[in-house]
Length: 120
Length: 184
Image (cartoon, each protein chain N blue to C red):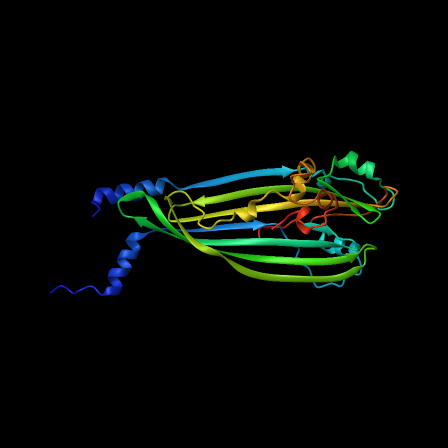
């Protein structure tokens, strides 16, 4: 069985071991589309989008149209370690932008992903 | 005269002695916007309401937008291992909650089909031995930690055409849903 000193030492140590954990990492392209941009359907060209945002993550062909797909992955992890009760939450946000151009390279439509207000 | 302790009291005392911690591990992959039901006529309507999709697939006469999010909740119970003060035995189980929206369009951009679904599935139960001040994950979530397809698209184009598992054409044209955007 534990001695009284042993138990007091254990409780004292556990009380000291509480803490927080926090880290984040990004991968993919830089999400420059979240900065103020001036893209207009019918007038903006694919070259202007490339100049503003850089090379896309992926390029696709939809019929005669061309699609540029941009992706940034942002992962954050937060943790509360109280030894008796612990909680960690990791949230992966996939921030996306896509641009569709016609055969002349003019912007047909574009959209950004909807970002969560808070973790679900 | 001493009163004999009941079995319940003995078990409660032993449980208190053994119980070292409770932990909750939460993970969230992606986000699907919660919106009121709507009836899109073309992909422009979907982009306006839902934003850029997670995944895109292009078939011979159609293309598909998919939106998918997964929330994983893993409650754990930590039990003391009596001779080892700084180690615990952890029991855990995980549940995933999915939100999935699927929209198919003709190459002209008109809606052909749409579907949305919401479901839960158990990811299993497991156990681990670890330090008392470390939150160990007891359920294998490796499937959710793969690199996003869009971020490896360029690398895939550089693979030896004789060795790749999927055809070069499939990669370039995104003929499979898991070859663009994110895959789960």
